[in-house]
Length: 134
Length: 292
Ligand SMILES: Nc1ncnc2c1ncn2[C@@H]1O[C@H](COP(=O)(O)OP(=O)(O)OP(=O)(O)O)[C@@H](O)[C@H]1O
Ligand SMILES: [Mg+2]
Image (cartoon, rainbow over all chains, first blue to last red; front, side):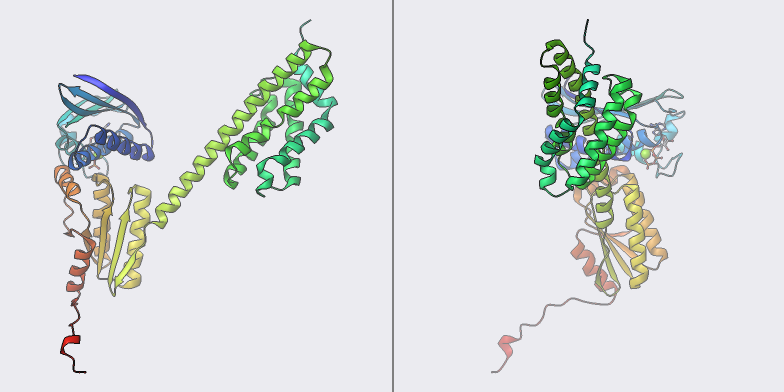
């Protein structure tokens, strides 16, 4: 698998979350994703960007266009140096929220993506990677 | 002996103040800022004179480093000037030229003073260039930051403007949502809607999300809260304009709005009329049956 394009965007404010969505939309169109798939990856990105901001205390996302054979995909890696998630299984459970959310962001992002990977260490930070393939 | 550029420059500024200012005024007068009437000549000259004095003060103890403490009053003054120009709608060129147009008159003065001493002239020109370039850049930085502030504020104003509550019929309101629903904006939207429900004694409120690009859990939560609050005020909500791709995404997210939804605002309106005991009928084509 090769990375054909890579860019990093900061996630420090609500405006940044909007910019992440816009950039993900542009890249999704770039690799030719249809309207439904575009909407799915944009929505997943919105969830993860807001988690990075609200719980991770801010961070960044690396957006990459990847190619495996003739298939193109969009891979997004959200990273923060926040408090981390002590119990990942609990965090992934639908309707679990430690804040005032619906508790559907992580599970939803997983269901909206073709690939989903989360690593987190208490006191170190959190990294979530998702991908959507054409 | 090597010539100190700052000293050469300082001397020129002190001894040739009147001539430099006069030449600077002329060049400012020719600039577009005056022509466009955004600023009066007297005001421009007052600013120029103050800046000139502060420049000389900065030079006398800070050398050619425009970031030095001795330049603080000048930097602050320029920042103020720049900020007000950004707000008044000056172009970037106009704003930058305020400082840069001082170069030529200073170079002229240096030439007059040090015509016979090439190394002093070179040192003076270098010093003037260094200080004025830095100050010019600073002016631009402040200008850009202020423009961004202006844009940010406009964004807020648009957010408030673009959330009108429309009365469709007695007791039937519509709230067409357009654009990004961040928390700040949704607060305004919700308040507007609830107030309108009270004012109009509305029975039904149609929330149309055709213009909302992304419905994530935050937007869904805002919608849920709005629907719940409307219910407490005695109005039922109908959500319209959920596009197919948004509907699919919401299913994957797992959010349920638990509210009646319709594909289009028109469908929602028809339902609202029916619910409030009204019906829209096509007028009979009466012409054919009429005797003339
Ligand atoms: N980057 C992160 N750093 C630390 N904790 C996190 C991070 N992302 C998620 N969490 C934890 O996982 C929980 C579940 O996240 P999820 O996105 O599923 O729900 P939510 O953000 O609480 O609500 P919603 O996303 O539905 O608005 C959060 O409440 C939070 O405690
Ligand atoms: Mg979340």
